[in-house]
Image 1 (tube, rainbow, N blue to C red):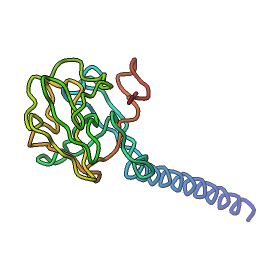
Image 2: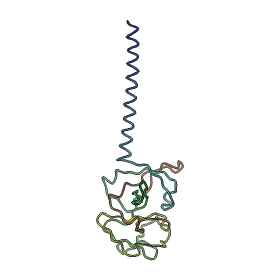
Image 3: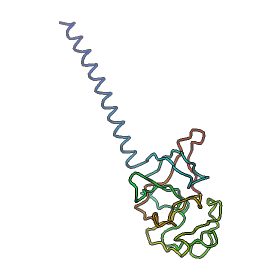
Length: 189
């Protein structure tokens, strides 16, 4: 009888251990879901519109939580969905803030009639201002975004993108996780 109870005890130990592992795996899956849904999201840069800051093929983690506690700032690199293609996201830099008037004249960005001289990200003169050739006045909840590679970027100047509202912003680019030789926190200012 003692042999039989020893085998039963070993069986219960194995079942207990398996149950513990199952709970652990379910907890990891649940935490991963919560993080992806509310905290961060992985995305990949496709194209050259954010060069030289971000390169084609860079893999990023997008911080989806900070805008719940603070407002977006000028020069934040943000991610938003492209409204004409499902599961397509754009990565751009905030240039114009709510309530401001944005215009592109003589190849430069002007905010409320003054040239934006603190913009160190657009390296070349803008050849095609598109809709921003005329003043674009942003509403209380609107943002004007541009790619750093200004002459090769589909951004708020293009009617297909236009200005964004706060709810359009999924989050801000936070960390580059690939390529491995360029891993690190992304500098916004």
